[in-house]
Amino acid sequence: MALIPSMMLFSFLSFLVILKSEANNDQLQFVYHYCNNEYGNITTETYSDNRNNLLSNMYYDKENDYGFYNSSYGQDPDKVYAIGFCRGDANLDKCRSCLEKSAVLLRERCPVQKEGIGWFDECMLRYTNHSIFGVMVTQPNNIMCNTKNAPKDPRSAAGFDQVVHNLLNELRNRTTTVADPESDSSRSRKFFAEGDAPVQSSNVTIHALIQCTPDISSQNCTRCLEHAMTNILYCDGKRGGRYLGPSCSVRYEIYPFFEPIVHHAPPPQPATQVTTTTGKGEGGEGELDNDIKIDELLQFDFATIKFATNNFSDANKLGQGGFGIVYKGTLSDGQEIAIKRLSINSNQGETEFKNEILLTGKLQHRNLVRLLGFCFSRRERLLIYEFVPNKSLDYFIFDPNNRVNLNWERRYNIIRGIARGLLYLHEDSRLQVVHRDLKTSNILLDEELNPKISDFGMARLFEINQTQASTNTIVGTFGYMAPEYIKYGQFSVKSDVFSFGVMILEIVCGQRNSEIRGSEENAQDLLSFLSNFFAGMEKLEGRDSFKYCR
Image (cartoon, rainbow, N blue to C red; front, top):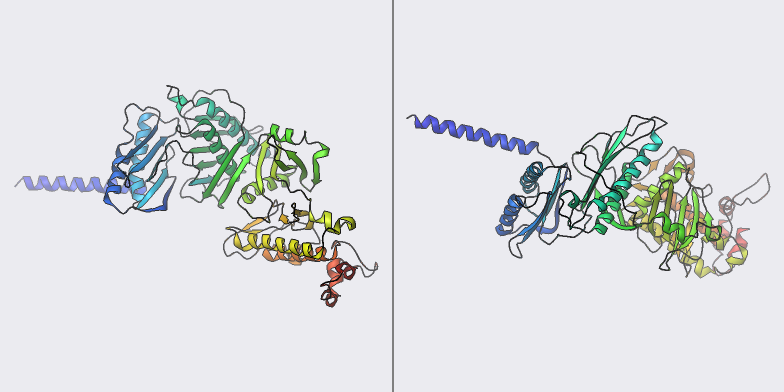
């Protein structure tokens, strides 16, 4: 009879162990995870068993002591591929413990998906149904910003973001030197670098860490990190930021979060191509406020642009706006480009720089000027665009000699092209964008006089179902601004439509809206003047339209 109580006690203790294990799993959370439905759901027990076997055993390779594991299990079509990767400062026991937790949690979080990925602070685990070894990828990824702002001390706040940028650039350059895939040194096979830098005139020190998976090439590691650093610009003004990707990661904070290691000298900075999609994640120390996508942007080094513009010579100058000068440049392969060099001391120029990169990089339409890339080096902020040879619309319509090149058919095609570009911004793109500075000088013309909307430095992104927004800072050009925007700071897609209407009148009449007509007592701009003669506008078809505007 004594056996029964013993059996009951054993069962009870086992039950408590199970409850504790389940409770721990409930409390265990990835910093971020993603279950990909693109490749469909698991439909066979074979794939599920292969995944479970692979994720449970791949990180017990006794010959591997540098925290990277890639392996496959099974036969097609149920073959599973996986990568396990630990942070460069994690010891072997801590690494394997992290991957073991990841294997359990990832199967729970992605029970039926054929592809999943999860990140903890010290490791990443990824599985899929196709080969991923040696391939640099940028999707899926996640950006998280610390919710607290950077120091507000006027002596240090302006320098905080610059210290972050400089430190990340230094670590990026150091990473490819540290990493040597052919080396026997475990440290050198990690594409890993960490460091810190003080913010002057404050007691704040910035700590940062960057890393790539060691199966990709040095060049692809650089590309991946450049892409990550571009997107982490979104965290400017915050105390910390983090980028998590399948092939690389970047993080900075104002507190230590890693074990220090020996540094090496950095190599020269290359130009890189990046492609990314970022989205909101779960947990972590902050959240990304908006989705960001940057498609095929290049980061140019400053020396390349300086050479392309003949040291920014006046002969290459195309024009000048409120926040910078635009130059024509020619790359070594003969490609012509346009470079906007933003004013060094302009805070608005810094805002425009970020806005163009984070927003314009996602917009692709034949009636929008294409952003090719960017450059930031020390205090320089450069935006690189496709070169549009026929200057801007105002160059043609407001000059009597050039205006003869714009017959009514061409003017109509220009109006229609601008309308197509606006329709894309307002309705057809994945984002709803309000330009806020539509005017003739921001409409460029290509070889065939097709229009391209340019200059998105003041543009604003609208959320789904958002109809309007307001601001206390009025930006744009008077004469093109809608009345409700000037008076109350309210703007919407209708604000762009108002500006478009003003441009139509200018295109038809060949005169600026800002030109004053009538006597001093009865002065009118073009819009007011034509409103009194609207009946005459109906007679424009087939005639010289300009005389009706005088």
